[in-house]
Each structure stands twice: as structure tokens, then as C-alpha cells.
Image (cartoon, rainbow, N blue to C red; front, side, top):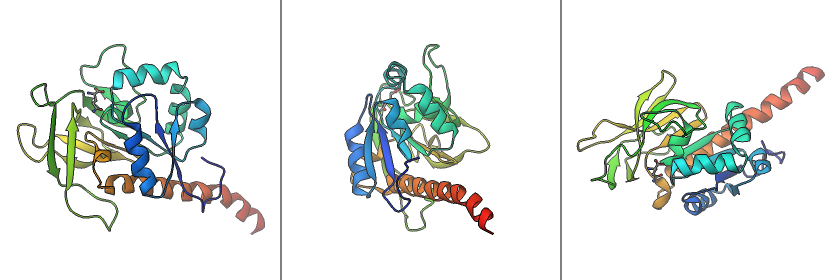
Length: 226
Ligand SMILES: NC(=O)CC[C@H](N)C(=O)O
């Protein structure tokens, strides 16, 4: 949690050890967030929310450990810091990987099982319009989802809300967007286009969390003076 005023911009970090960091920074910046890269343990402490980009989850896992980011990230996520993972980022936030390599660790937090590269080699990349369960009352309509060697969600726990499924083709019905409390993940890459609605949903989760945090900090004082 940043120590700046609650009225200041939410500071949202993008995990910047590997992957498509720049596109997420641009999307967050366009939404009026204070978007910063996260490479050092101290940087994990100063952010209000975290985006984990697409890339290669095995490499990301190794670098997170090599840069001493694993422990602070685990702690902040356990404390309730909002996080959003796209593609490899979804894998990093998953509690379980189906057929995972024994040496691959995730940060976890989302009670889901993901399957890496689930759509198969023949269809490395594809695009589809999906129905999306918007939480922002202002957002409506489908999402044009871009999948690049994407995972799908094979199993979800009872606390997990399914936000989107594949709409057509052999994989129709597969879960590709989820939310559980302050954690959100998509198999696809909303950062590649100009549509900012999914990032906007995450920024509003971060804003709400900050408000709750500031309320929690203030309430003991209010009791004192009552
Ligand atoms: N575009 C992506 O992030 C691909 C994810 C990658 N296949 C992985 O397993 O980590």
C-alpha cells in the first residue's frame, strides 16, 4: 500500500522481469493510473495493485525467484493486494498447473487449475469475440480476445467467478477469464488492442481496495474520539 494520499492516483505495478510489460504500462497509463515497473523487492511494497503480463511462465517463475521477488509478492497477495494476470500471468496466479513441470512454481492465490498451451500447437494464436461478465455497470458488450499460446482454466474452486468462456470451435465452453476477490486473470491479452475495459475493471478493483484500506486505517481513530 503506498503511503501517499488516498486522493492520489492508484499506483499499479507491472511485473517487469519478462513479457509484454510496455503494453500493460500504456493501458494503465491511459486509464490515469500511476503505472510503474516492478523488478526489485522494495518496489513490491510501494504499489496498490500488480499486473503480471503475458510471456513465458517458466522463465517468469525462475526470474521472480532470482530477483528475490517471490517472498514479497506472496506476502502482498496474501494480504489482499489486487493482482491481474494475463496469459502467463494467469498461470503465475493459479494455485495449480495441470501436468505442471515439477520444477515450475506459481505464486498462486486463485483457486484454479490451468493447463498451459492448452489450445494446441496447430492453433498457436487465434482471436474470438467473447461474452464477458462485466462488473462495471458502464461496460457492456463482447470482448475481442487475442489468444497467444494461451492456457485455459480446467477447474475452478467455489469462490471463483467465471467471467468468460471460449465461444466457438473445439474449445467452446472452456473458461478463459476468472475473478476471485481482488485477483483477476484472463487467458487472452487485452493489452494488445485499444480496448481498455478489462484494465479499467482492474483499476476499479484497485481503487476500491485502497478505499477499504484507508477506511480500515481510520476507524480505530474514530472509535477513540467517539
Ligand atoms: N502469451 C503467453 O503468455 C503464453 C504463455 C506461455 N505459453 C506459458 O506457458 O507461460
